[in-house]
Length: 272
Image (cartoon, rainbow, N blue to C red):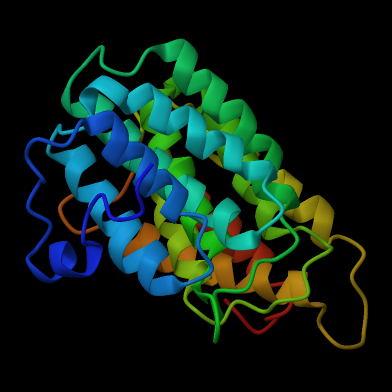
C-alpha cells in the first residue's frame, strides 16, 4: 500500500473530509497500520481521530468486522500503544453497531470480548501518559470498552463488572492513577449498572472481589493497587450519587454506593 494514499496532516487540518474515490478497505487498512505508530500525532491525532469519525459516519460499514478483528488482535501486540488503542477502535465499532442493528454480528462481538477480557485485567503497562508515546491510557480506554461491551453483550454485564474489579485490584500495578483513570472506571461502572434487569445482588456482587483483595491489609504504606482501588471507589460513590449527565443514576445506585462507602471506611475509619 502506498504511504502517500492520503495526506493525513492536511486531512486532519480540514476536519477529516472523506477521500472520495479511495476504497474504504484501503483507507481502513492504512488507518489500522497507523494505530500501531509510536508517534502520537500519527496514532492519535490522525489514525484514531479519522477512524472514529469515519466509522461513526458509516464510511467503513463494509469493513467494520475486519476493523474489529484487527483491533482485537492487537491485545497481544508487543508494543503498548498498539494494545491500548485497540479498545478505542472497538468502542467505535460497537457504537456503530448500536446505530445500525445487525451490522455487527453477535459472534464477532463475542470474539472481540474474549480477546479484550483476557487482556484488560492483566495489562502490565498502565501509564496514562508517556512523554514520548503520548496518551496510552490502558485503564481508561479499557473502561470505555467495558461499558461498550455491556451494551453490545448484555448477558456479560456481571462479568464486566467483575472484570473491572479485577483491573482495579490488580496487585501487579506499579502506576498510581494520575490521569483520572479512577473517574473513567467509575463512569464505565455506572454505565454498566445502568443496564436494565440487573438484580441487587448482581449490581453489588462484584464488590466482593474488591473486599477480598483489600481484606487483610495492615499497617504500613498503602500499596499502589490499593490506592488505585480506594480512588476508584471514591469516584464511583460520586458518580452514583450525582449520576451521569443525561442519564441520571442507575438502578440500585444507593445499594452500590453504600457498599462502596463500607469499603472506604477501611482506610477512612472516621467516615459516618
